[in-house]
Length: 432
Image 1 (cartoon, rainbow, N blue to C red):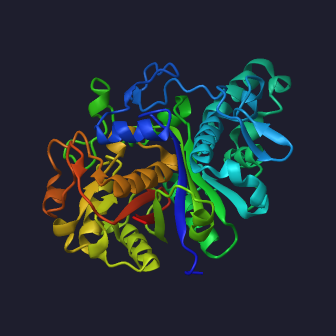
Image 2 (tube, rainbow, N blue to C red; image 1 turned 180 degrees about the vertical axis):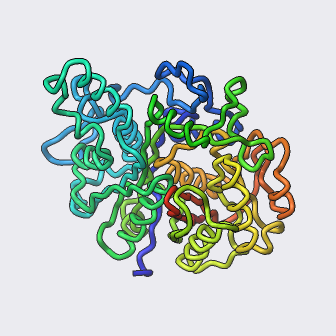
């Protein structure tokens, strides 16, 4: 299994920082915030009035043409009529996947690649929650006859992977990891393993989420999980800062094209870098709180290092889960410090959620992309809004890359994603 190497040959993203991967990356290293007042619904008297929305994306805009099979030509993800066939999270997933497909150059080689050797795994944490609200309101007002026949396809999490598969003729493994905020990190990792063991030569690996709505915001607000810094939205997401008061809900999608190394070389593909290792674990501790000292996350990182055959000292950057919650940030930092005892000498740590907000099921994929681009370009994106480092973090002497990006050449980065229920995933990417 370990003789098959896995590289990334295409990326696509639609996020609060940009409507494509390159704009998203450029704004991340510039330290821009994607957080603002909520515009997609009337928040009324809700205690939380801010979120990191994707603004201005139109899923009906032509992006092709592509010809993934002999009898089909793809010019766009959705027509105006077809929008109802998927919820907003699926629209974002399809858009990011088409961008990644275009970026990979695969379309020119499709006649030589069996569709059974190309798969898709798009992780989604919650699915079509706003669509559930809309259809239920119609039902209450007008009864059963007003329930759209597209209701179930709009809300089931795996419809994102299904629509990408249908659109681009991907007949290999077709999966959707649903593991809360670890969903798309698990999708990247499981896609990596699928290629290594020979189940596919190419995988569309990513995640999508769009639950900024009355129930999504209201539910997390009732848990006291969200920041209520409504008067200063751009400063609300502040991982590792002593004044953090909760995470900021985000939305978006990201897709990475994973490809077996020799397969990519044979077609002359552009290669961003390599997926080197993958680890996963369970806390077995609490529904929503991390295990003490981040013990479960530490084991996930340790497993990823073992999978990659790397020593801790070889990691130059960690894209932390770092949600800006009072409990989680310090526990993750302690786990990093324990596993990387020489961390102050060789590590930079940052949380890009300070800019994107928390994309829930899509977080792992976008943060794996950030990690990959950080290695490729030798630039570490910052943790913005880090004005006063939490004393529990300060005592660890780690560099949390406060406020500004840092230029640094290094070979390997690790990305963490941890989720409710105690589920953890870590992905390591490296220079090729």
